[in-house]
Amino acid sequence: MIGARTVIPPNFRSEPYGIYVGSPARLVKFRFPEKIRECLMELAWWDMPLQWIKDHNDAFLADLTSDEGRALEMLSELKRAKSSWVEAPQAG
Image: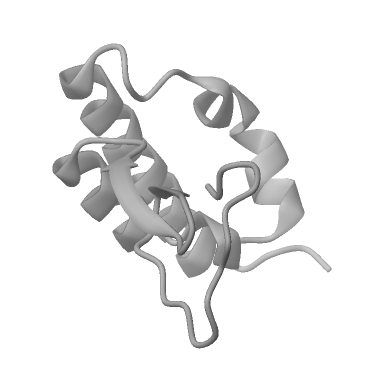
């Protein structure tokens, strides 16, 4: 996330799920705890087809900040669902 009026310098490199503000932009915090960020990066949900995301829409609407244990369980379930999707032949 980039805050309003934040100045992004040339060759700016951001951390996944970081929140940046200021002039020049600086990391002030992360949106999620480290374990959740790691799971999200492993999941790589952005590489999945839109239909898969739609099929798991409830998980994408969940608050990952309210209960870390539950969030990690949900992300593990999504990883299993991703594995099943990738391994199963998809109807074209």
